[in-house]
Image (cartoon, rainbow, N blue to C red; front, side, top):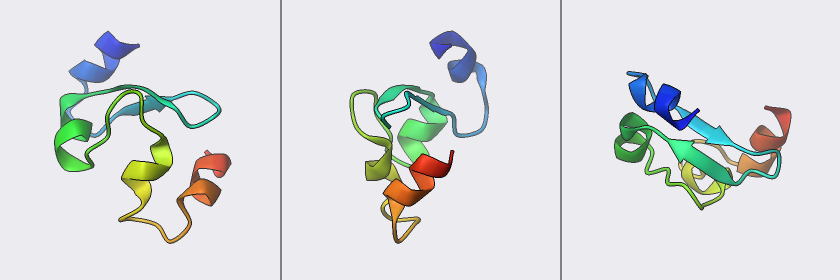
Length: 58
């Protein structure tokens, strides 16, 4: 999946059911500062008032 994500031109973040980020592409690292090993709520804080609620819906 990491190889597939890196080929994408748009922001691509792959996380597990708990919200732990497993892999991201260069666009995600640059645009939303998402990094493997962190939680998805962290990069969503500037975009959403309640990131955990958004992550659960996904």
